[in-house]
Length: 384
Image (cartoon, rainbow, N blue to C red):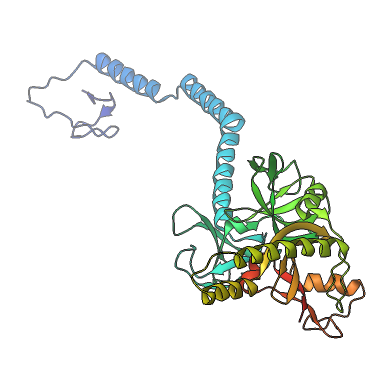
């Protein structure tokens, strides 16, 4: 009688202990396992094989749906997310470059003669040198040692300059120096960062404020020195320069007679009258003795008398006149070289030391010293 595998239904040999098709063990005769009906075993085995085959078939509906979803996600990324990711990357790169730019060295120009210091502060530091007006310097901006002021650390490592004295634009050409003269404003004045009303407004000052005038620009602005350092610009320059110089005054100097011309000689005459009146009052004053009287009169005779005189002489500012013991002086706001240059242009023979030839008297132009420096930078003097 033929034997069949109870697992797969394959025909078995009488002596087989394992199925040659599926490898299942064959029950030994006499055991409790009964031999299954032939037809039933074969049908069951076939059904099992059919179920296993069906389970191994791919689910094309599920695969197709998954592939479609992946395609949609890829399209969404390409249309929307890739640009955003690229933009974000560019922003990060740009941000990094901006940070690098902030710490990179930049070039500036000195708006005035700027001190170069050994530390980023004005307190307790040494001046290593100067950067003249218009000089180009480069370095990195930094906070000063005081924690409030801004400084430039020079790229060459040779010092620091206060940022208040620097600008990213080159200062304008000065066509007419004004000698740092002080001018009291006649009305409210606006101060600009550049000689242009379209630039940044730095400050507004009220009438009666004092401004230090550096020079007149080609487009009718005046560069002024600011109290906290640096410079600014005010409009209507020619008008202000004329007001700052005062009303014109005539000066016709004669080195042989020590005459300064009719207008100034008249001022000296009035000054002489006041000096003599004061001297007469001292003479008539009561003294304990003659020795005390003589001492008081000698002190007056050797004293210089000054009178401020803000007037304009051909672009120079006459600031004062003075009567000394045996000489007279006219004072100017400008440096001696500037005054000498003007007098030479008028035909005066001014020597290198400032002296002017005279028959019997001394005459000359020089920088002021002592008490006279309070009234001007230069004096034209004549006397014995």
